[in-house]
Image (tube, rainbow, N blue to C red; front, side, top):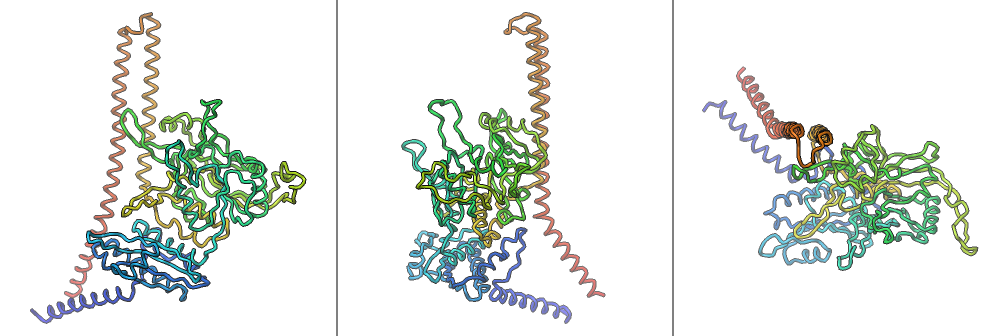
Length: 621
């Protein structure tokens, strides 16, 4: 071995030792340093977080319980725990001493474990010996208020910063703002629909709202509103009495903020048919015209928003067996449907709606209206009665004709308006008459859908170590809380929500699928038209020959055989369309897999070979 080779080998060994030393040193001292390479910047500390932690008036103590040794056999949770600890240390570093972090590793049967249990942390049994692991957070403020995260779920890692900041914010602001809810829907739960059924649970949206607000149930038609209400939330108003309407009128004219959710077809409405007319469909739409008409705003009567680009896919049965098809009235709105200049919708990724209405403004309206959520241009106004009487999504699809314009689904309304009760409180006695506002500036948000709140449209329940935990599949809850916070004057937490992508659909694949399905439906219509034409020819031949309908002539038999041949040919074409659809999708999937799995490693390998050859030639020269 010559000296040149010896030196080269020694240099490589020294470089390897230095590399290992640098990695160990960096791992020990640079744990809070990270580079966020995610497309949505999921793990970059946001401006909202910085604003909250740097404006803390009093210290907040955080106790992070992490059973590190007990979780050694669970590398996923172990690594996630390290990331949570690193992020908490970054919070503490940026808080100028206002956040005091303590990392605790509770041993089995120790005082720390007793404290974790007493504080409500969720211990998870991980072996037959009964050892329990803890992976949660307890926060407290100077007045001994406590908030906790019982167990960090790795499925919520994209929302980690939001969960941590929310906990700190609630401790720093223990006095919650008040949201008064008027609703004719069972959002607060209630008795079962029939005797013997278990009571209905409160909707998940209330749990989300209660984390930030003092939520009060005002009933379906309150006589008056509490003076300390910060935001009024009116859900599916139906048959509101004059006292309730007057109270709402005076509240918004006095500067009170409001969120109105109305619906031309509320799928969660439990109204029963009229006993006097049991065959009639019960009234399932909201009624707020007394206000909207005076402002020059309307939710179009008996019309639903249909959008073939944003329509959800549902399972249906057909002659070819189960298949997926688009259901036009159920919408899955993407980022292009949201107003990116408004705090309430700027960070949303996806929102699910069901049988939503359409909001329009009259030309002579004096209020300002700005859209928050819209359909795409590939939409139309669908007749509500078609949805009520037609259950086949394919029939509904056949009625689709694009209007080539967007439809407003949620809007912000502001401006100076007059009272809808210019003579004061209706039916008031002499003793009950008081001063009232005849005009004022309103500030409210109107949503033409109530199903946006329903669990079935945005929540799925998952079992986590034997505990059922609701998991959001859309930003519906974020939109509602964003709206309430914005109306009550706070926007710091809004920038943290919805930073994770709940679903990452292949847009090219969806386009290919939609084009093929359009072609597929066209061929089905042609086949149905040919069937109708052939039946008419058969009837015509029978009338001409005067023969019984049970006896077919040669011409009739020939016509039927001709149709059957054409039918078989068309079915082959339909199968070819479906085959081509699947082929295109599989081909695209193969290309994506090659790029993600094969191409990048190949590029790195070729780059390494090129650099190695270049260095070798350089040394030889």
